Length: 144
Image (cartoon, rainbow, N blue to C red; front, top):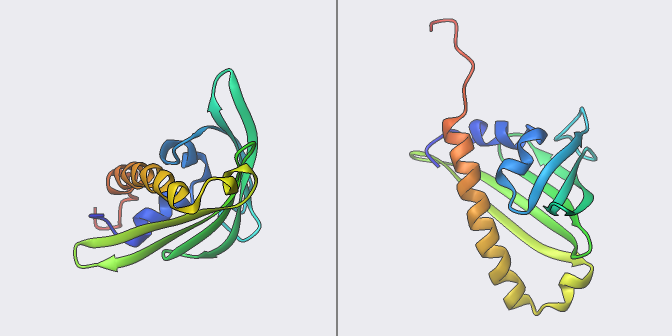
């Protein structure tokens, strides 16, 4: 991405933006005030109206500007562990998403097929995250 790791983390730190970049999340109902601290949750809905399911995503681990690990619930499919890693790069940063099901019916899908589906979904999520991070409004400095 052609932005700084802090730009990406600023988007990740805004729990209200979650539905803008996470494929499948349709609306945000509430965000814990201490998001993205470990243990904080985003309360979201998954699906399309009128078939919406209310669920939560909770932070398992957070390292500012470099890593965010989440437990994402999307029942009836199940629960997934999602890790977003941000690394500096010559022209900005590299962001990767690692995700897999940890419980629920999604585990019945063979892992190679499950990973192919998640890869396609997460490629779209990364593209959305990139748009938000590269084009976000930044605070003005004292010299501007």
